[in-house]
Length: 304
Ligand code: UDP
Ligand code: MG
Image 1 (cartoon, helix red, strand yellow):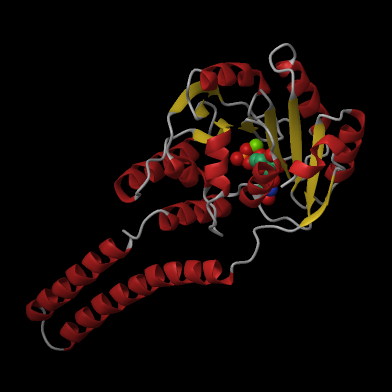
Image 2: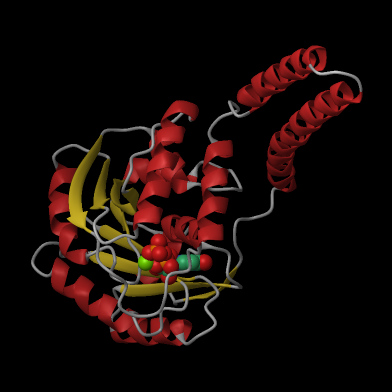
């Protein structure tokens, strides 16, 4: 059974050789036939030439290079589309997703799961980030139409039919955590301790995390419109009540303030969905490929 590994890479020049060695070591004696697809997500360092070098020296390593930095989600989609295996693993280039876990995950997958997820325990993370994530998952359980799991990220192994389901989803704003949950199938879990990044640095600043979080909330439900509606009603009622309690000019101030707040909030919610609709309506491709490693002849016809 053929295994594909999809690795999104953005400015990982110092990590690729180490990734190569770790993967080769982890899979030796476990999987005979495998391919590794390095997706260079418009890196500005020497990631692409590293990927070229690796693929020349080890034919199991292939690469696809995107024309600019499109983000991790599009890079993963690109990799999934190029993967030919009957099982596909997704992992980060920085070894924060330890390849040593792959054999265990594959064994579990073969017991009948379609997804096996490596869950990270939150040890070693700053307190505020843990608190932020916890709140997010609590909110998402209440608001989302799909069930997200804390600590379950993109590190996972998928069956061919799960991959086919994922790549068939056409949306522009991809929020993989939600998509993985949306496609369903039986999911198994293994747990690992968080490991710090060794080379390069994380690209997820707080702002990017918040952005990603909002993407998740708004692509999996339309319930935020409901609290917005309720809040609107409540504030209007409150403004009415306040208007009867206070005297003279203050009434107007209370009423206007209340209504103003509600309007701005509602506009924000509407704007969020409108922006999303616009992006979907443009139907642009998720990414543009600049170059990819030459395919061996035997596979040329199957390339997709
Ligand atoms: N990545 C990517 N495109 C981006 C940002 C990140 O392909 O625009 C890749 C990156 O090279 C790494 C993975 O996505 O393999 C996770 O990124 P990072 O380590 O920065 O995120 P974190 O581990 O902090 O969540
Ligand atoms: Mg990382």
